[in-house]
Length: 420
Image (cartoon, rainbow, N blue to C red; front, side):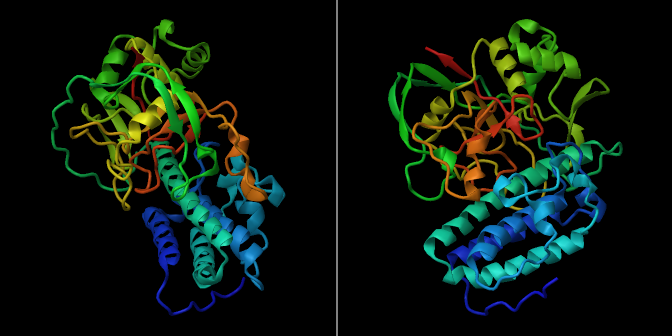
């Protein structure tokens, strides 16, 4: 394997600083993990932390260093097969369901790979043309996505361990008053502009900007809390097929679903497992780890519906996307009770009733990076707003996250809407 080259000693520019900071956070999130912790894969939807750390390094090495830095040699010729995710244009790759079988390279060897890529990237960034620097910016946002995935995959992994280990000690809980009744933000309907306006970074699926027609509606000024979800459970919400889509009811029956993921009834008290261990649920905190099927059933039970992604984006565009409970550093990660005023960002991703499909005029980028989002626009639903595991500054009103309707290992919650 090539030795780590010497880096330039000049003061780093803005993109270099951003790259350095993003990379450092990934390693801080993984710091509590043993080699075994970082290797195991708990389910096919999740990936080992070690794989995340290596994959995002492969992304920079492949699409920037290999393709745009003359004379660069791959760190290890075996790594592209191991750490390519889904880029068909990059050739054969190790199957996703067996990423947990890659016991070698070790976590330490993956960190050495990252260090090699980091030195080469920091050296190359000042001299790259603007289009390649834009690709490096995409890579930084890509790494932020994997920071969130790494946290949620770690949570799912440790939830499988019978001793329920604690990754980060939690802060002492301070009782918080339950929020009052939901307030409603009304909109009289009409044409609105949706999608990225061209200012700053955005993923390809956030555009083109276009016009959508909204019908008169109201959207809730907060998300649903744990106490409200407990009432849904107590009222038989998981046992009443009237509120469930057909596929959702089949999913509930086939999997014995009776509460959000990580909830468990102990001594007649609802508890939840988090990265700070198992604790009683916080009644005032937003409910999380619910699927689209559960979100839709709750909305039906409440006499409401889920907002469309366009209703949500238009309402959220008046609010600060950098606010709320989002990821700032390594440490305990969990939704927190709302503290007054409408909030659209942070805590939990919010399911919408909108299918993840392309906007009018959407065209994927040329080359392998064109596979980034477009090919997943089938069978999934849009989520908005970011979560407690989303790096601060990553989300926007026009940001479109997406998952399949049964998935719930992410920090996913519910905001209601209704027609007026």
